[in-house]
Length: 447
Ligand code: HEM
Image (tube, rainbow, N blue to C red; front, side, top):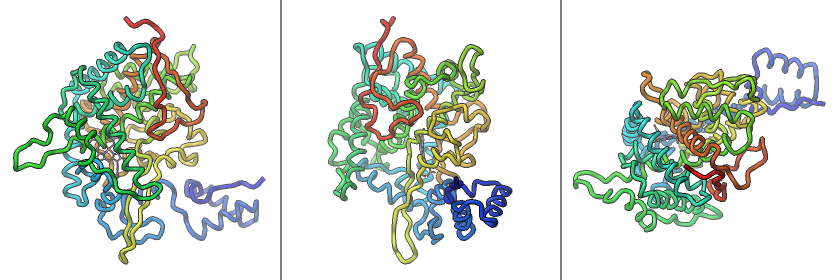
């Protein structure tokens, strides 16, 4: 039986000794497939998936032919995002075609994402109150996607837009805004398929405008000297990334009968009770009576990172590459494919297994093939920032863990998930319309 090795991804992952062995095998002719593949490797060293993703994100040179990109890095990112300017009227780091404008927005976002301990306690209370209110007023069943959208929206507009998130009487308006953002997103994407048609612009989208106005009344009014800041500048990178990932994380943790579920929910519950950095990193271990993953500890951070690994909300990162001769084309860094690569993550790459993060450091990102938050040096998301002091947490992973945690705590024993899910071991669907039919059904009378 010949050994089949995929030259494009595996050989560069081999150690020097393994490579020497492979070359020796080729030299003495063991196995036709190995010989063929090793020769291909010797002729043309292939670029690993990770290097290729990083090169595309960096946008300096086309990784396929090494031709320098004539566009500056920011323009290279802004061009594929032009549809967002038309569809949502936004103007942020993703759409700015120069470094100064891009980094000015980044700085504003970064400052708002630096939430301190009292700030996290406030966010936890807001999420818990919201979930309790929705479950408490539901009649027998509740739509899970809608709940994830509502919670993600509140969790973002509090810290980023100073919205009053203690209110429980404006949930319909928030759900409507979430739904309008979703509709507009789908319309802007489908404008390219099967052939390009004009995108419905922000100005033409009266439903979206009304929904935005209902949540942020008078947002356009500001002194004549200033440009009004569109709240969607923050809602798009924040809310859009969050709701889909927490929906899938919650389904994985409580809806798929994993043996380790009690351990995971304990780790998340402890973090909800004490939302701080120390607790985010604290390992929870299975008891002797519990079926666990070989007594490996798991933290709320590991659960958040595993969710973001298997279900990265930005599945592909796009850049435009232009040659000095003016030929232009788009390339995408396939983050989802990298995150599920068995050469990088092992044979169980498609399995939700937070324990795999046990030995990995808090700052394990590019080095281990994890690009859910983009890639340094130029395009790492400010929500991944790790602070030098203990009083603040990296916003992205902390928020993912907190929302999944609150949903788990509040539904535990009282609500069950009903609807169709994939069989164990198969990743959940990733398209944004998946799981719209999934419900939480009350199994016990609420107090
Ligand atoms: C789980 C949550 C999040 C994930 C997975 C995520 C993911 C990403 C990714 C993949 C990029 C790189 C995009 C590219 O290179 O084209 C990025 C960049 C960025 N993200 Fe996030 N993001 C999250 C939350 C947020 C939040 C809450 C904000 C707040 C507004 C935010 C603001 C930004 C900004 C401003 C950039 C551009 C950074 C720069 O160009 O220097 N992100 N994010």
